[in-house]
Image (tube, rainbow, N blue to C red; front, side, top):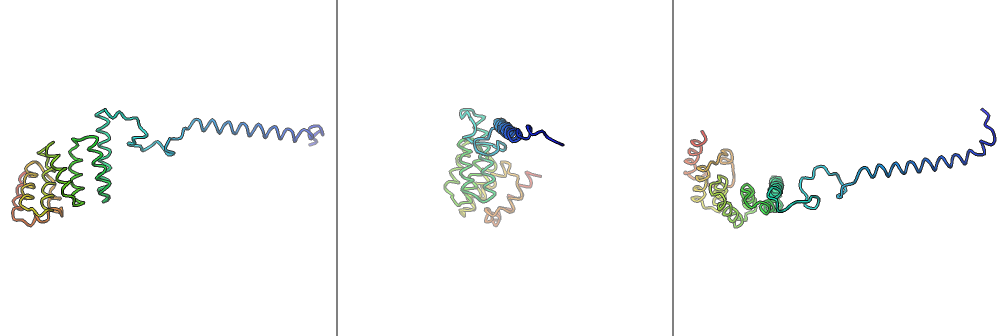
Length: 202
């Protein structure tokens, strides 16, 4: 096909104009796409954010918000305790109680974490606080039995275990296997407690 000379002379100019139009259009499209997808402030995805004080406007006076934050830190503490990260678990349980100072399960697990660290003074203080809130909590008395057993006070450990069962303690497996109460299991009165347990949970 023969192309007239005048078109051949215009060809470079047309190519330059076409390139400019293409580049400009492409850049405009890029900026439009960017403006449609704002990037989260933390540089990552917004998904999976359960609780972050800096990311969320929280009404700290709202009891419901306080309760939610307490549950979040309690769950974090449980995960960390299972991973044997006891110090971090303790921090989270204390945060849970900062948000909700009547969170009974947080007191129980905090006292357990302190026992794991052999911090008997703080474990006792935690259990005494829970006792002032709910003196009939079965796990309160079970943890008291662990506390006394670890200190070698078998009679008080047995009495606390008896009270735990009377108040509805139901975990037979932990009763048989928990190393914290090994010395209680060696005591003749422990068999009486087993009979009491079976009678209450038959």
